View 1: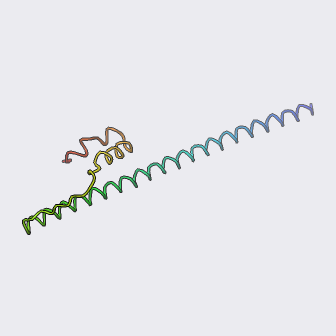
View 2: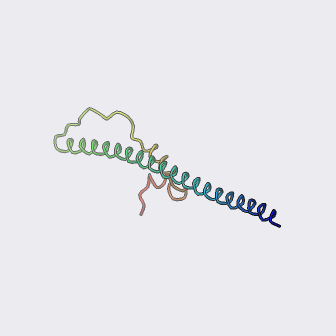
Amino acid sequence: MESWIGVLGTILGVLVGGVTTFFITKLSISHEQTKERNRRQLEKLEKAHELVTQINDRFKYHLGIARSFLSTGKKRMEEPKGKIPFDELEMIISFGSSPDRVGKDHLTTPSG
């Protein structure tokens, strides 16, 4: 009987250790996945901020041209280089949200 107690204690110890290791590993993997998802979302937000800033700068430039034309009648000739990054911004927004919440219609038509 005493020999069975040692064997049962060993088996019970292995089972408790295995279950504990399994749950700790599962929690660790879940935590790492959450951290990675948050890191990717932060990168998307930073890129979206950069693109919105570019769009805002272009808008301010064209607003300045309109004001200058209205006050002097002359149009400035220099034009900012590059295209307005609407497509790239739309891609970042649509990858970060569900398709039913964000789409082409949300960026091109006013809501109302």
